[in-house]
Image (tube, rainbow, N blue to C red):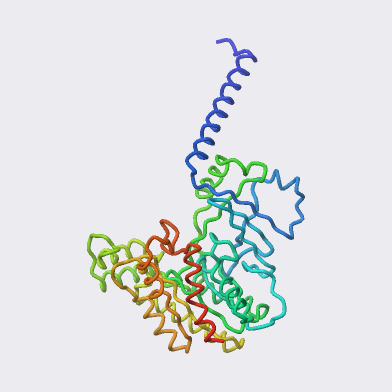
Length: 382
């Protein structure tokens, strides 16, 4: 067989290239027209020495998160802009907190310690409940300062570790622990590659980078030795199986159907109904109490409910009662948001307090309601 001519090879190469480009163009148009949820993310390290020209051609942008021996932390002095149904900017200070830089105290300083509910990735910083509490209080003449110490995915053990790292620099008068029903365990983090700035405008490129991240970087569970029993899932599952009857049906109207759902989502929220899991919470609350005595700050707890707890036709508040019982042993005051949020939802169900298809995270309206409920509680503490 005679070898192919250089011209035929060139023609075939051009055909393949044009077909590929046409396919990418069609995919780009499709993703834009269908508003496929591939957010545009820009990451800027404010202390970086990388030149702007080099930034354009890097294989990927830096991340907001970093892995440490004690768990995930936010990179300090970093700004991330997320563009999806609006633009939200997340900026960290030199301590690695989603907060402005801290100066000398001019009034009571309250550190809100928590996970993604407190960090509030999808909410502009001025609209987070942490900042709204400060703004409303100052508007009425109360000179308090609030600090956002939330880090996405953190467990209660992580939060106590974070507090021990920053307490001497933040110098809080009060630490408000924002307790979420999945705080028994560190939520596995997903490392995500962000395209270089030169290509970040393309929906297709962002789609490919996102799905490449999922396949190349499986979610990591950063467990420290002794954090959980080796058979923790079996223990928690056994607790639920033996204590709560299950049935088919609508979990919003059937407690038995909700019990079945807890087993399906054991790590996400179901463990909050396991008595074995609460021994871990108790141990971490004891560590928090010890740290507060050593460092001289006060502690209060706020319980954030699960969406179904708020919207269901029946009341299931076992986790809230368990936390109140354990907090009482340490002398921590507790504010339970469940009654107020249930009242708000059932009075105006058309006003979404949670993001769509989300069990845990609050909308801007949710943050507004939380701030209005927490401010009187905070004021009494001070």
